[in-house]
Length: 361
Image 1 (tube, rainbow, N blue to C red):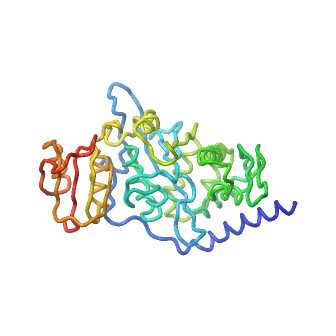
Image 2 (image 1 turned 180 degrees about the horizontal axis):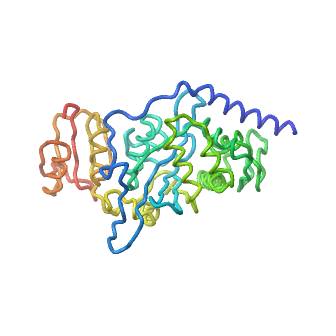
């Protein structure tokens, strides 16, 4: 082994070692105000098209948390897995951790929703941003992922471009055999190479997940992983990956912001997991401002409403401004009260209502 390889492998083991030491410092999940989709976690809904005999899908957000700096952060772009309840081939969509979404952490990247509110915070942001139903949200640590991959053994991973860090080429373009610690580092730590953009990096990560999922030893490794009892759902989701036929990557528009055309391209093939069986682009949109907004935001999302903008500021009363009295009454019933009136100032284009939600409401 040459000096460059030794230094790289030492760096990998240090990173994973720090994660192992930090397991005891893991934080808790989302606050009590988080609510699930009204479809419930145990009853996946069928397709919105009654004329088609389609198998219902169970949907799971699967994420991996890094503990290398003694705080819980989203280590790897999360996977949205759609699994037929009767078994068979599954589909998965890999989402960029940097994707901005309105969710429990406000308007922030997915990684911030996950860091502040755990896997349920991540799920809430994805529900709102993409309009997709999520039945469960599960998470494992990078340490647990390494334990599983140790049982899988070495896996051949495709590197699309040479990766250079600190002036040294740590990977040439082509195929590389990676053991568990090396593979977790490849997935979890950004490449410090300015030549590699987010799209290319995510394509390589999606390819690595596909290789993990299709490795012959993965099913047995998941079954015999020996993780804690509370990791059961996460292991079930990991096992589902073994039936995934493709892992497309969610594409960013202008690097950050997704527009409705991109949403449509991402969600068109996922009709059976549209939230409340409603085409994501057809959801009514609202602006929400006030304090302690997580609970009302999640109530709105669960009712098929998209929160387009969330602003934290003090407000005096629960006020629903809309030009549609029926929509206003729907929001009033959902939030348990309030005054519905015509907007004092015109609503933004495409907006159905503007809601002020006070702390004491």
